[in-house]
Length: 271
Image (cartoon, rainbow, N blue to C red):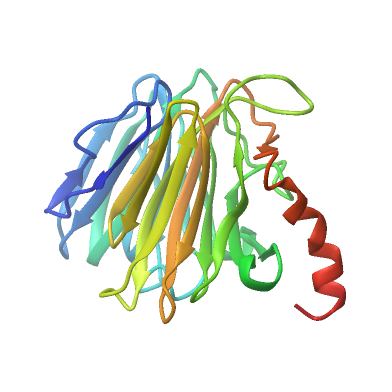
């Protein structure tokens, strides 16, 4: 089953109250100016995505410098840091800091690295009222020199009244090249923050819709999923995938897959 809940936003590292995923994990880090967070990655790789603010990162005794610039997720591309398994991580906040820490099991022996905003690719997926913007932070698309064992991470911005991850798709079994198994999470923010969106998750024996607000999270090890923004509001979600390989392959809901075939026509018409 999937899990949808509000992630606490207290000082330090906050976690969802439960997690149905076998591989993927999430932490929401909140630090005041000068506060410090330390942890060992153990047998997991971690990607720290700066949602807002900046901090000084030290990984395995190596100074990665000050990372972060944007005040919030709606103000440009992110800075991120990849922390391999078997490393000690220390973050000291420069001003208030918010970061997402996504992780997955790893045995990859590599060096830590920073992903600056200029390495984040962006664009638009879909068309018409299911167009949405994206940032690809740690993927194979245009980033073959950024190693990772399992993690695939990005951001999506769904405009007022639009649908996202549409048609709904799944990625719950390894059947390449048609489909690749990946657990997924969506961590949401809304602008303005008093607004809302909706997310639907469904599969055999389950069909559920949830109200998206700031700091809600959907953890989905299987099933079809989609998101819509209420008119007047933009929804953001950080998405992270973890599976048996870093090849993305999804299957659309067969009842709705025809919608994807309209994208070239809609774009040709200026939609």
